[in-house]
Length: 289
Image (cartoon, rainbow, N blue to C red):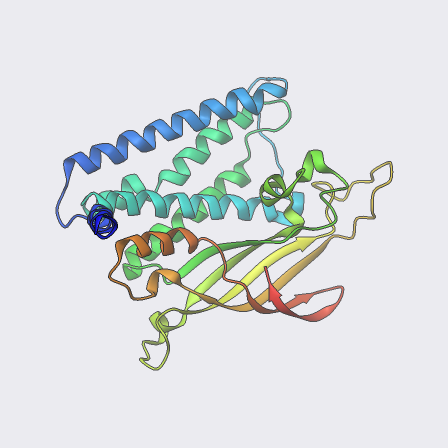
């Protein structure tokens, strides 16, 4: 009885407001501002503190990591913008303000991080990163303005590779770090919702087709020679085709489930996939992560 009551209260709490709910709006603004400030402070003290500071400078890193790092910026800006807009939607803020103040959340936060890079000797302010941030924000806001929905979703998948063990300082030491740092195991997907484009009732509303991009054989940003017992760099671009599920389109009256689906919709659902690359031609993966 108590469990059912608690579940009902949580469901009511997670239900988006039909009209402007000022306490919710204020809570969203305070929470986002606090988390943003804490994250930037933590980055400054725990990450940039380990590297020498410098005068503000720019860096052209567009040729590094076969552009996998740039896709990471596109993905991050897109997902943070989606999260920001959804949070304001929950508080009943108008659609226009959701896009202006929520949809740009990723671009704003990542711009601040880029400025930090500009004052670090190890990195530098990258106009390529800024363009990628703008592309991710534009993908989210553009679809909302054009279709009032996200017909194309940016998703992510990851599998561990042999390369992280060769350079754990750069590619991560352990699954948690490798998930973020090892570009060899990352794949970024554009997931298209089939029903929203063809509007055919015979097509399940949750069915997506996904096109992915990844790269492998990378130990450094560019094709540099490394001394020591490293495996050879054989840098290869990889292109994928697979099916996917748009979890946000699964019908349910539970706002708890909707919230869970919204979170996990950032990740590509594992499915069989076709891979195309210059080295091996066409490969079939039974299940691809």
